[in-house]
Image 1 (tube, rainbow, N blue to C red):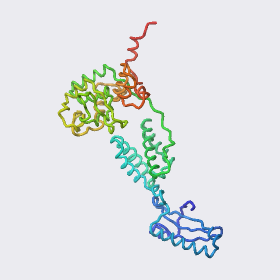
Image 2: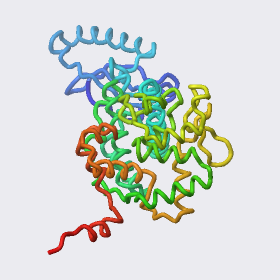
Image 3: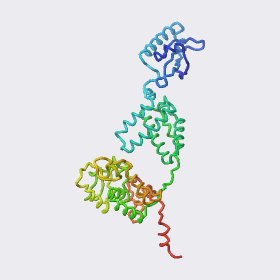
Image 4: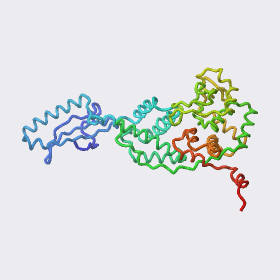
Length: 396
């Protein structure tokens, strides 16, 4: 069958009403064909369909060929009247699903597989940002018609928003995963984001949190009696927990006598259960929160009560609560912008490596998948390095 061509046919009123114009046998000088028009189920535009049948005349002769082909035309018109559409053939039917429907099905399926934070990210990048842009610029787009050209235009749009290279790369990676799923489920035939290059990774702009700064932080939090924030920062620096992981830890995951927190696989960034060691100082702080007397299903540092407190609570805290506390603390104590919350984790890794703990142990404690990543996290600016080296340099 030839490639469909757009053309306004006779009988437009009929085609608008029924979605097609009846098939007819056309006898041209050079060839014979069966011709009809049908609406595309997505764009609702009429397309001409032609199937050359010249071979019938050669094989059966003119008279018998006409009889056979008229029967074929009648059967085709019966199928069209019953709702058959040539654009929906076998697996190709899924290729015509509107993009918003495919996205909805994708997110629904991923609800059972992804962590809440990852699902929120997928909803934001795919269910909101991508979909809104696509509906504005390509209202009738399907996953199968989302071409490489459109993908490039979208990534240009992301870049023009002034997002960092990391954010750009994360967006590309997420959308590539979505379209891989589309290909797997037959909603698309290729991944339009597969050939788009990632941007060069930016060097992390974080500096280490030195011992004197940590003492300053501790003194201020003790003055505020903000035990919850003290616990959170200890867990980041000593236990190497990620802020998002801390936010999802429940009291049933805390084992004071065994001196560790069990990070469930559904909470861990790498989806692997692990034990995070608790320092004696952190255990003392946790005991002050009386966690052993509270229900085990409480969140370790939860609550959405007024203020910025982090306390054991039946309600989970806002996922950015710890970072908001850190931003406020940094402003009050006038820390540089490069001293971020994650700087404490970087500092913890660096201090452990310098203290003589072997690389493999630190890698496992940090929940890294390779030693290369562990050492990479330790490559941050130490503001006290010059002073330290000045005292330790040997004489010439």
